[in-house]
Each structure stands twice: as C-alpha cells, then as structure tokens.
Image: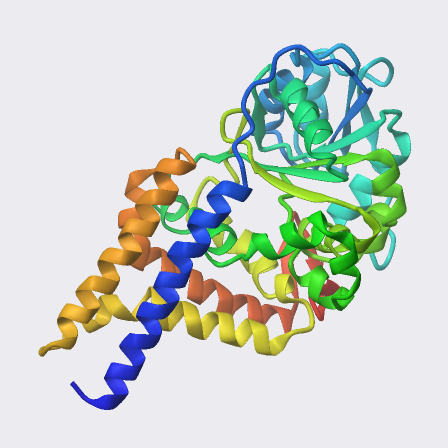
Length: 396
C-alpha cells in the first residue's frame, strides 16, 4: 500500500476513533429524560405550535398536547395562512379563539422574516406562561411529557431545554437520511466544550463569544425556554431571517455562557416522537432548506464538512472494491461506521434498517448538500409554498 493511501487510512481511522469517543462522552452529557413523578413547583407553561398546511399531522399533535397531566398550561396554535384544513381540524377537537386551547390567526409575513420565526414570534407575544414551549406540528407527546420536561429544566437550571424526540421513519428515503442527524449531533458535535463553559462561567468569560456560539445547537421540534431567558436573547426576533432558527437560537443561548445562561440538550425519546417527513421528496426539500443555512457565513466549514463526510463516512465502502491490503483497512472502517450507526439506532430507539442503509444515506445527503448550495446561491430555497433568497444562512 502506497504512503499516500496509508496516510489517508490513518486519517479516516483517527476520525472514526474520535467520533466513537465523542459519542460515548455525549451519551453521558445528552441524558435521557425519564417520566417524572410529582413536582414541588408547577410554573405555568404556554405550549406554542406554529402550523402552515399541517392537516395531515395537526390533529394527533394537538390531542396529545391537550392531554398533558400537568396543572397549569395552555396550548396556542398559530395558523400561518394554511391552504388546507389545518384550522378546521383544530376546531373539530375543541380548539377555539378563547380558553386554554385556542387558535390564533397569523398576520401577513413581514419582509426580512422567515415564516416559522414570524409565527413563533406572534405566539410568544400571545403567551402568558412562565415557560414557553415551542413544538412542531409533526410531534406527538406522551401525557407525562410536560411534567417531565419541567422537572428536567428545573433540575438542570436550563435557560433553554431542547429535547430530541424519537424520530419515526417509514419510507426508504426517510430511513436512509433522517437518522444521519444522530451522526452529526452526537458523533461530531463536541457537547463537552459547552458543558465545561457553562459549569465554569469565569472560564467561559475568557473564551471568544464566537467560539461559544459555535458550540450551540438546539432542535426546533422541542424548545422549552424560561420566559425571561427567551426575552433576554431577543426571542425569535433575534433570528428572524435565519432559515434554521432553532440552531440559531441555540447558538444565541450558548454565546451567553459567561452570563450564567444555560443550554441543555437532552434525549426525549421516551416522551415524544416526531415524523419529520413522509417521503424522499419531503426529505430532499426540508434538508435542502437547512443544510447550507446551518453553516451561516462559513463557506470553509461547509466545504470541510462535506469533504470529511465523503472521506470518512463514505469512501471506505468504495475502497472495499479495490484489491490489496487496503481492503482490510476499508473493512475495519466500514465495521466501525456500522457499529456507530447501530449504537445510535439502539440508543435513540431508531430503525436498525437505517443503520444498514448508511452508504445510501450518505450519497443522498451529499447530493442534498450540493443542491442546498446551488439553491442558496441561486434561485433560493423553497419551503411551505414560500421562496427564500439566502444570504449567509439567512433569508433576504
């Protein structure tokens, strides 16, 4: 085997080893939230659901939220100019324009805002709770979800608690692509850096704010804010033009670690589930919107991430076809990749088939990344019937 190939395989093996180590550390940090018993404190909570053309999903979501076994909460649905039966279905299960379960009608979208950020901003303005829980219309919640999430937020002193639901995947496209989120969020994200900074605010004060910001991530499927923390960072208005507003909010919170502000990501797979997309076309469209925007103005990071994904998590499958000793290197790397994917599937109650589809998912994911780059630098990305021109990860 040539010196060049030896260096390449050493690099791939090193990254895989670091990914394994980082994953194990993150399993300890991104803890699973379990159903909680009775609470000593029951602060009021506003559950806020932005919805645009969600007739296929909205009924299950709202029914599950209305059945929370928690004493002080309201559920607000904002109908963002839906063209389907979203509002009618909400009314059919008891939601109205008054009471603790009610419907708000969205105002016209202002210039410079993305649709979801504007919808969430309006919901926050109408909310009365001590906590604000933003959750998506494609989520379904166990009755003990709210009680358990509040217990976790109080215990960890979270300014923002973001739960990661169990991801439901049924079609081949969903199984191949959606679980790659675990590889990105658990395998490659160094959560321990932010954990240390939040534990020692004086140490965090010595770090560049931009560094802290880059350690932040959150999942818009479940964002539980203390009201005062949400207002302190400027709420959704601070990320009004960002196409991946949940990640941007997580970064805003992380950037304030020196001020005692705490971002906690946790495993919520026992408390809620989410089916993000229902076919490959929806997967393609959704990730096209998010992929380039998540890297904001860092072109270099976007390119490096794509090259690392290709080299480390895809090329070993191709190198299996070549003769010589490197085939054994490639086989070891493939086994390491599959063991990681199977570990994520078991830990987060996902599909074992999705792990076996890893090379297909990587190919589709890289094609989506290229398409996201193309659309972001050209005609713009489309989502929910709206087109956004993209500048540095933000809509223009």
